Image (cartoon, rainbow, N blue to C red; front, top):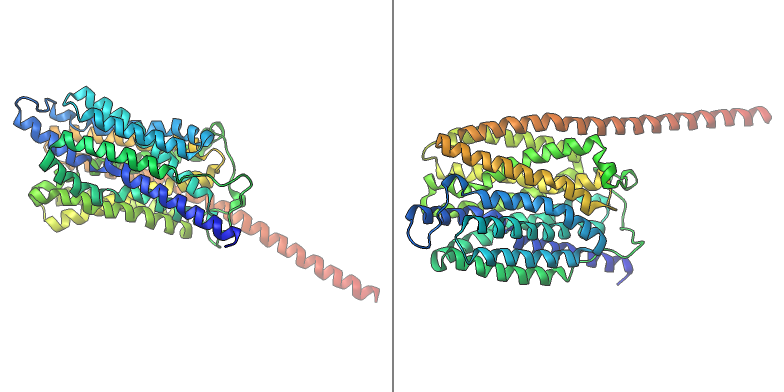
Length: 446
């Protein structure tokens, strides 16, 4: 086996280990099942039950999203300095500790601290260590594909965790289930972390970017966090990420509740089914953006998501058709999943790999704030209005605004490409003129 084949094999090992870590950390997306158990406990009352305000029931999930996002900045710096292995192990142990903590209590603030802060930070540490090393082993032509594969594990997790969590909660209760999950995922993440590694110093990825790839290797700058924060592109990306991710997390956090009216006791299946859409969105967006460009893919995704938000208003009103509800939620989450493949690729394309961990961590804060704000607002509007109409309408409008902002990314890119094309054509013309003059000179001298 030659050196290139060895590096390819190592690269795929790292990518698959990162995918496996995300398959464990994706338990975040099954919150709606835990939320349902907490809601039933509040309604039942009695000794040992959850004594929370109904409007606050999503708070641990919202805080978890927020801490997930902001811990990515710290974890990204740690990953850049000490490597992905240590960072992922720390994350796995934090998730395990947070889940074990909430398994011992029904206290609101303990759940905020355990599930929201501790588990949220642990997920951020593990997630931040999964994608960067995988991207470093592959050429720029595969940036979207590899990012899509690794982050698809996070979205696909609910396929097995949702039915498992629903079964465990019904048999063993919520708190014992949380303890089992915490121990299991701490072990799994720590073991998979041992397979993570960055390429050796001086490593060069094999193969050149394909024609039409979103970004050529030579075009990719290496920006420090400070330089990135002075770039206008960063703020456009941040706002688009805030809107796209926040709208998707709003749906994910309430998926089981939205499906309950039409699917009854089988509503938990929507959580598992939409996981397929979530993972598919990441894979499809990664591959498509390698072909047609990140900005074009982002614009299409935001407009499609806005259309689905408006379509959701009549579909979810009353007792909707089970098939339509399931398809709608799946496609909404498909679009949400595209964010998680597109924005790491954007970060690599625009800001480089040298400081990728911290740069993407800063950009990822948009995901956390989007989830925190829109999830909280959606739950408050639902309590006030008794439905999802207001929150879906507001999200749809925001998504269209995000699509319009994202046009500037595409326009700048097209302009840059046009400039390069004109430059190349001018150079070609000059070369042809020089050759003609050279021939004329030769004829004269004969």
